[in-house]
Image (cartoon, rainbow, N blue to C red; front, side):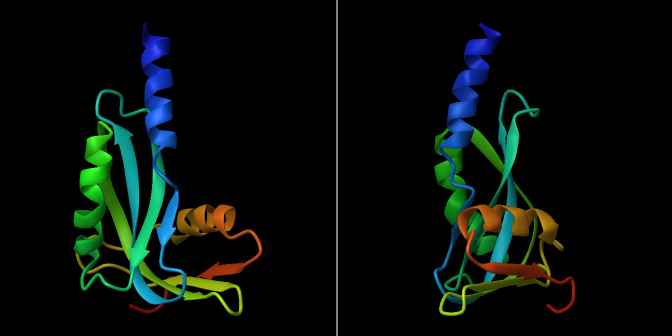
Length: 128
């Protein structure tokens, strides 16, 4: 029975895209740890960001219902900014969130590299 439950949870986690960001521009982003409510050992990190968010918390507020609806929980582990230049195939991750602190940008970059394999993706801890 436990193995069946793990398979269902794995499918739930897989249903959550690793990266959802704007296709171009400068915007705030957050790094979220998505967890199974019944088993904290089952989790993954996801990146969310968009230019319409005035605050990092706005992004979490936007994605929380979809994650909750899958029977998962979302914990924001930090934030920052993304500069996405689609014409030059370049992404820069930097800064921090006043409310959530600095995300581990190296995790964010690894997630972005999977979705944007032909891009130059870098990060710095400098800047706001």
